[in-house]
Image (tube, rainbow, N blue to C red; front, side, top):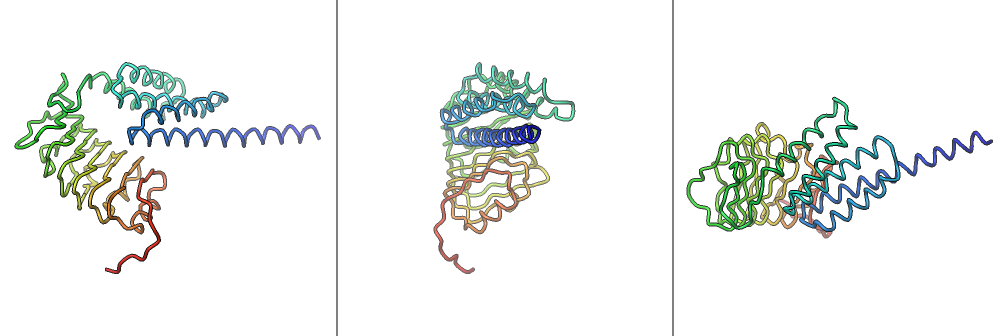
Length: 286
């Protein structure tokens, strides 16, 4: 009888651990969504809550997700412009990844190292100023009137032009193989074709007049975050369905029928998809 009681207790503890771990993982996923939405205080609180849960356990998986939590804190401080704290948490995450991840899982370790270098390089590019960072890999033209030819460095890694009166997609961005971050929000773009940016991970085209967005899947392969909110889209860009590595897609404030949203959700079950609430209405026949 005692033997069965011990087995039952072990089984019950395993169930509780599994439930707590899944809850902590959901908290971290929600924290990353809040980082995307620039709700940094909420994101930080969610990470702290997840770390409290994870600290109760000593398994490989709980330690791994604790490292992910530190990496998320690095993202939060990085986006807030606190590069010292960002580097601190990236280093902590990297140390934990080193301890945990075998040679078959080096991707996350190297990605974290890259984020550390990125936090060092960006320095202090201020919003609203037309300037380059010292290494000229970061270009910020926000709140300036961007017209004419853009003379951009070939090894460009980040290009930001918010509220810059753009009415067409800058062709000078094509062929920038190191470009990872592209922000063209709050402009007057009517259409955009994304191609020849093989390392692009973060794309923000929100608050434009976009009715058409296309992706060349052969040369756009690494997207993780896509923000197309507040445009005039009437359908989901068909190429998104094939992008299985996407972490978040924001399609709010468009004119996309729910049938298209549902199809995207079905094809990207591991992606967070933000969309409008829909009333139950009959869709117009074409």
